Length: 403
Image (cartoon, rainbow, N blue to C red; front, side, top):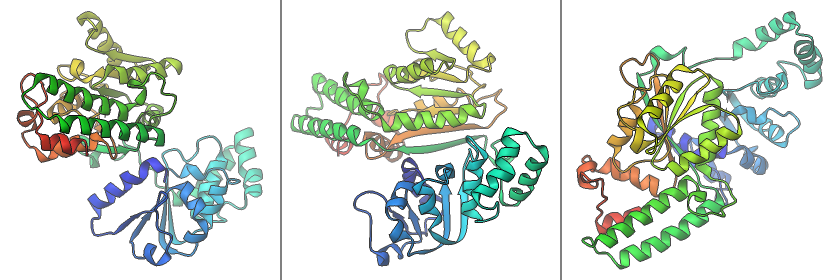
């Protein structure tokens, strides 16, 4: 699977099959001893790691090999395609939302993995199917190819399985920081921890302000370091993951609400949409009432306006946005009720589609700690956030958030 999905697979296995032992076979400290690897029920790894460890993984006889986002092997001339095909398994499964991205050759590569030889060698496939179908629009060849692959394909769209889904599905997606982003974050976190714990003063308004500023700065760094550092030239792991999710959803014709605590973070997405000439709606605290209604109308009524960028404090309540069937919570808020209010903009009376809410959380960051505090404190709104939305933390809670 792609590197960004490893942690999500790990979480889902623990949720649905907790009896299975799982090995995260990624990173510099991954096991290279076959005896250790064979002790696990499930081995999770990336395409690049599988390529690097090809000689090692070839020595294991797998019961199943599952490829997620299997279009990663679509190039039959690539080293990754060859490495993956050299692995041995009794059963093979290929998962992809886009099995044919550019050409029928994508399909051949993935079918070659799960059923070697079914479609002949690549030269034969190109002559028999790619050229007649792509260049000559040969209907008979298309039907023949369909009949060959159909027994091995299970196509499941959201619409097809709607009756099996609850009215609202909420899921977490764990992102990882880029190496440069992680370095900056850890340095900032260490400095904040030292400063705040050494001078703890729960009743000092200046100290409370310093706590809020430090925690806010860390939350911004995991969203995108450019929010804090003017000259940051690198990428953000979570920002890239959100755009990847959005691209898949957009191509399928869905509409999504983007909620963030930070208008500056929403600006990054606005700039991307402007550059790509994608229509969008926008709602922040400085939008006057009349223009707010106009933005809502555009999103609700115009099919080409597929995204709505909303500040969670300005638009997290009181709006009816049932044209959306996806809700992206781009960063966790201290009070989970605020997030539920945001999700309820789409999941409400008048909605005739199932709603998918995705909460994007950066692994090994303050965002995970916020999620833990949410789970630990059933009365988080009373315990941490008072009526004026001022944050109050004990010394232990500050230490936990900055650990």
